[in-house]
Image: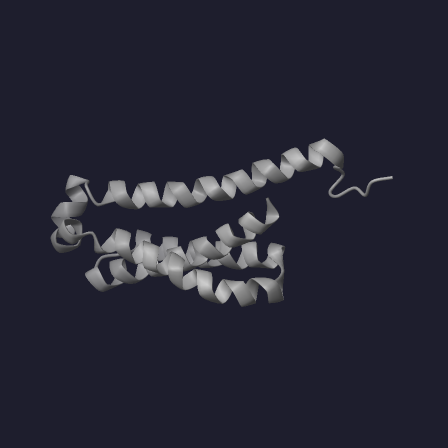
Amino acid sequence: MARRYLGLQGSKLQISIGLIAGMGFLLFGYNQGVTGRLLTLNPFIKYFPTIALNGIGAATYNLGCFAGSIPTIWVGSWLGLRKTIFLGSFIMVVGTLLQCTAFHLPQLIVEPLVTGFGEYSEAWANDILS
């Protein structure tokens, strides 16, 4: 008899894993879309004119994702999938708090690095999970 996980087994378990992993990938794309769209809004350009013109925000998010990919290879294997997802989500919450409270350019440059680092850690675990 097949083992149950959280009361699910067989095709119901596979569908549940697929939906949860899909949400992780949706979050990854959503973060990239929000970052790109945010840079074109008039209030944002008015408050941060230099960053809106040269796209540092979007570039640092991608650099954060790259920086998160390297240590996640080892940390993810050491922690396991579930703990890696929780750690990545926690780092993303910290990055989101930095984004919501940004009033200066350096803080707005550091925030996508932190968010990207956490996002890729979580996306890596979702890749393995699905």
